[in-house]
Length: 279
Image (cartoon, rainbow, N blue to C red):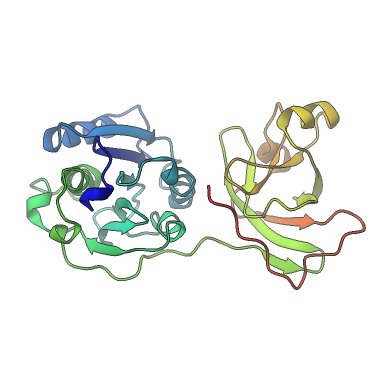
């Protein structure tokens, strides 16, 4: 792994801790104490509380914009203190540390699958004592700090099995087009689906959103109406320029979405949807 490490060791933090309390700052303190030369980036601390799926989506869509060798610490952990494991995983030249609750799975699979995975259990790479309620501080941050210093993954604990959680949902062929779902709603109220950026409109909550190229085009050509466009993550999203599509349509992650082809074009029924391009 040494050859894959960035010139300056880098750890990226993703949590649901928010900024009102000191939890996120304490992770910085632990990392600085163990690995003072490691650079720390706050990817986000505003994952909705205990929303593992939202955290998995944000990690998936962000990790590959960091240099290979980056260590990601993801802490959205409603099962903290339970029998769920804490994992450290190498995939696609990156390292991921977090609870084995599905949070890491989408990013790890997108990176090509786990090259190696261990349960973080060795006492030399934890704080003592380990709290029953703050494994981000006592287990995950120390493990990430040691990894950033070049400690071997295998030193952290025994090999782990397959990662928990469901795989990323894939679109399915329908008579009317492609059936998918809303993967994530961002802070602007944009509904990001798992539908590929094929031509057509997206039917969401019973309303057809017309296809545009940009938010500005949508505001100009279809004021006050939801529109469909290819988002930065490589999937189709439904947006309401100047407003919140999620609020206007009353939808949340998991809501059904259907991509309908333009008139005169054949339905994609019977053929597989193209894979999303690399983020």
